[in-house]
Length: 559
Image (cartoon, rainbow, N blue to C red; front, side, top):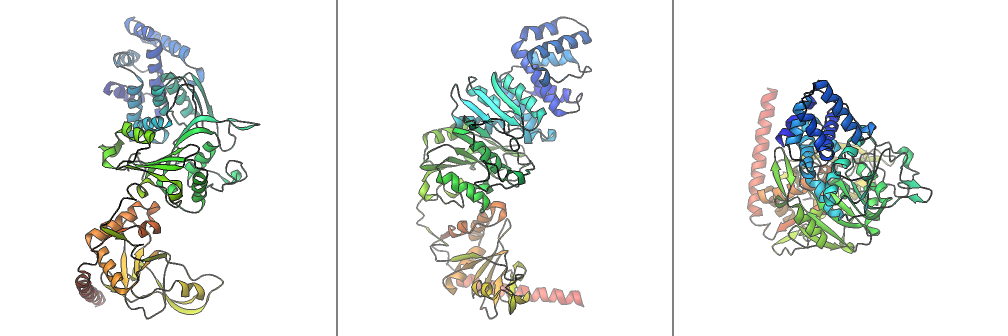
């Protein structure tokens, strides 16, 4: 492998575009697999450099289509490269690892957008359960690195696909040739403007579909609103290209499809929820596999694999975001135990990492695996905020509309939160607002306030509320049944165990916006109120002392 990587780096110095270097390496791989004797003849015959170069060009051009051919810089030491190719064992798995290294690990090449980590490719193909004769479609195949995994499963398939970038498509054709997949129809095309695989009878159907959509793509969607693929569902969201590609792919799906999507599309509301509702209503979700964090270079998102097929009464959730399924590899994580994941999927097993949930128990607002795996395990040692009778709601903007009237109230925000103890003084006084909304969302004594966003919670406990006040839109309110429960919960969230549990809710929430349903399900220990009176008394004392110190500092600044 090292010799191949060194060869790639050597060739890179002589070619402006790194994609050209990949094409040239693939040309050498094809030459070795199809004309080994000719390759060795070039090495053994002591010809002049220009003659070797000319004969090599002729050989390679006889093996691939002219449009895919990339000319090798004549200044390259051809004999040196040919010897490395000849001496290095080559097979699909070695070539797959080579491509993984130059695209996913050598991030300076900036190729990670155009391919998928090799282990993810292997899992995707295992989930598809490809059989000889299958027709497989990929609406955005990039450089086609997944074709090697397909070739490892079976070469007797028909491969279809569309790709916007011609240079990427040329590489994909070469990879399909390396994988010995002969029956291909890989097209350069914009699937949104003019899908190729469509006739007067509608969209062509394919046995299997796989898709890792380009998240960096700009999606011009205005002209698609009347498109039969998208118009009826209203799920066109330019910030979520995976939903557009998924919806397009559904028009082509016959038996099973696998799609890589961001977790936030499994839990956000509004437009994205319409697609989730359709998939559940039509029983199309077979499985959702949550992938380990930090598995794709230069991606801060969390990802899942969505498996789509017809007539599913249950959804299998597998949480592979567990140390059992990944290992550290440099700056990033790599998926391991792929066969175990594939076996769990194939047999629909219930394990510590997976569960099978009937459709009637599925909650549309959150389809992530982490929200279902082990969720139904008996937790006799704990309550939840819901079981404790806590009411949870978001703050509101209650001013700035035509309904505003003259009314005095305080608009409460995070800036009002006291670090410890009771929060009772508010700064942002308003004189106009929507009286109906202000009355509806008015804060009450001993409400607990949380920040809506962030990676860790900010928290406050109100004291006796003597003035009219409303939490702004950046706040979540927790309203306990009584003062004692509110103080006990506030003290629990102050302690390390409660702070960690609450922080996890923030970390799991899409776009760092807290999901209220997750808060309702937050486990609270039976002994959460232990020593709460003592802790709260101490916190109040410390809070007053801190306030005095802050006032002294302010006075010192003003002196």
